[in-house]
Amino acid sequence: MTALVANLPVAVFATAFVGVAAGAAWACGTSVLAPPPADDEEAEEAVEAPSPAYPRAVALVTALVAVAAVPPLAGALGDTRIDLGGGVYDLAGTGAALLIAAVVALLAGLLAYRRADDRRGVPLVPDLRAALRGEVYVPPGEEPVEPEQPAATVRNRGVFIAFEGGEGAGKTTQARLAAIWLRDHGYDVVTTQEPGATKIGMRLRAMLLDRETTGLSIRAESLLYAADRADHVTNVIAPALERGAIVVSDRYIDSSLAYQGFGREQPVDEIARVNEWATGGLVPDLTVLLEVPPRTGLNRLSAPADRIESEPQDFHERVRGGFRALADAEPDRYLVLDASRPQAELSREIQYRIREILPDPIPLGTEDATHTFPAIRDV
Ligand code: TYD
Image 1: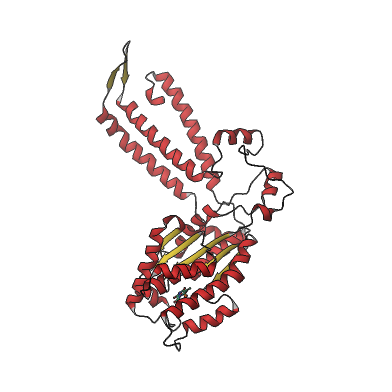
Image 2: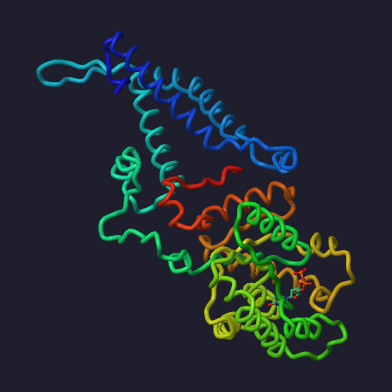
């Protein structure tokens, strides 16, 4: 609207108003993003926490680009005289450039709102009105949660995150770091791996990875991995998810699809079917795929190569292509990362992505009683 005003004093007041509003938005945004002050013990981690420098830098660059781009744009657009029938309206080039900037800002704002919306599906205005009254808005038709209702019935399922990748991609390290981060935020976390997370699984693992195992048929190999997975789901993953824990698994079904399917050149849909049956159809909420060229990954390994690792280079190339194809087919459920990037950067991206699927660590009833909700701040 400021862009459309042709009267200087009105434009000055309108600009001052826009400035105050922008300043308030900036102050709110930076305080929400700022990491909490770290005490000594946490100082080391605080270094790892993303700093508000990133949004600051983005804002600065945007401002510089705007300063550089608006004058030439205004010049190019030139002044326009619009005939309104009864009179004329002079739209200056600067006004038109500002209008374009406003539309861009509006779109960016909408996008940011959609990404940052912590209560999807709840309309903004009634939610704000309720917040002003100190209440929590409940959309009509949704029964308010009874405070005496135990949390377990409200949230009876946890979150399942799988880490996948070829040899030496650093999955194990990233899975561990993600689990530590989640525990720090008060979540009940179960870290586990395939093959060999259960007692039976350990025996299957020995069979599968021992280089002394020779002549194992491809179907038997696929079934042994699926058997390990069935035991893993029944005895470790499903009970943990039922009690609402976050399960972080180093490898899951995709490893069978990539290694036994793509690597061994077997029909992937058949292996998927066997595994669906073995797991009762349990699919991770998020799969983090760490990508590394097989040559680099295999060179990173310190222990002597096991039965699978000692497969030829082209086998590992097919495995890599297989993982990629799986991720490309379902981009919403995957986070694909280049494993050659610095570890801290990878952890941070993984944390960003995991945050999107996390339930609130505090039972709903507690929030209703205190009218506040905790925010995870170190991102
Ligand atoms: P592991 O020592 O756990 O390897 P990594 O440290 O690379 O995760 O051994 C698992 C090996 O088993 C690995 O080479 C991949 C292979 N594998 C399959 O071939 N199919 C599967 O379904 C799974 C889970 C693993």
